[in-house]
Length: 528
Image (cartoon, rainbow, N blue to C red):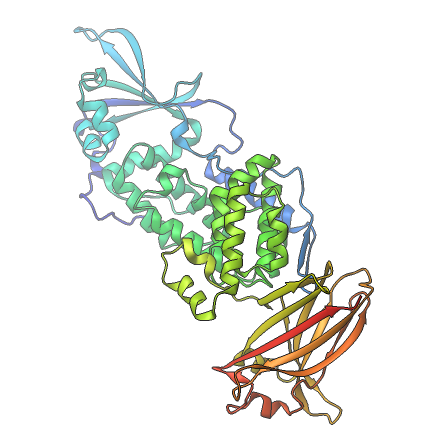
């Protein structure tokens, strides 16, 4: 790439030059262990193939039922929390060659500086090096040449590396002399970055990070960055890279409904977490987020205990439980997705949040430290959150509260609608829908409806009453009432809830908007 680092001047003229060297470094390439993807390049090829396979699988996002269905290739293998490219886990062997005073070889000893493995040498290359220069650039080499080890006294040193590291290590050694790199691709730079981390060359790590940060981000490069060894991810010079990768993934999947769910399910843990952490994620409801988390866990972890552990330690804090429906929260209480103690705390906290006044909710979302309290922040849901009060006696009844912003209502004109989150009545799921309609006089007006999204007939007669708050009394006043026998996927309501034109309803002096919020209430009671 020819771009100089900001650190020391270039000593490229001394690279592999016997006149400026005091040691002979023999680098032996070995093949050890069974590695599926021996380099970043292989990893890219493998991931791209698996993602293309995933995109050929089916997915359905049914906004009417708020359910996500998908089919995953059960034979696909996604690496999670396993750094297959972690070069720290490979063997690094240093050999010193003893010479007699007459120059003859008398023996060889091996000193392992890494994990001992059974290796076989495939090939070797020799370089003339300056121990002072390498020691000045790297604590690894400083230790090798300056701490009294045999290597510090011998002229011949053998370094064993895995064959997959060869190109990166050779590039790293050149950088230690010239402060520049010749590789230009993301996979190659990441290989050098990992080699620099392994051999503790901080200046090269910083240089690689700078180059990578200024390259166009792609999904492959973002996933590669997030799949780096955990010890490398926390390095100060690498954090800007990982942050950029997370932002890229969050932005790419901002409207998650536009992508095959199988593609999203194939993301590694850190990539999936980047999506969940985004406040700008566009989803019908937080229920959908929770269902996606469960599907991701089941596609990656077959063991129930392992899924529960990953949920508790990695994913739960990114789910906005306070904005899930009460019905779904009840189901979570009896699930095995969490440890009982944790799920009880999360559900109780969410239910308490629902009954808090709106300004208290805002305080919870903004005044407490992040990211822990991001769970209180409401995303841009397409299904509007509701509050619900339920009664079992003397008759099954629920009172549903739906608040709509003035801008949401204005956006309905001329024929739009807004749906609420689902709610439960008599074991069946219903929802509210606010709509901009045409009345019998062909004039636009605001309507409110109740819908049943069950595929099977509800077979129940429901008495219902719609109310709204007004500026005059600040209390709810009844607007319309009726009854209806619900069958499968049917709805009932009133085309013109307020018996006024759309213009009067939405006007700045409208009596129905209090601080630009329309407060609606629906009371539903099952007839015996």
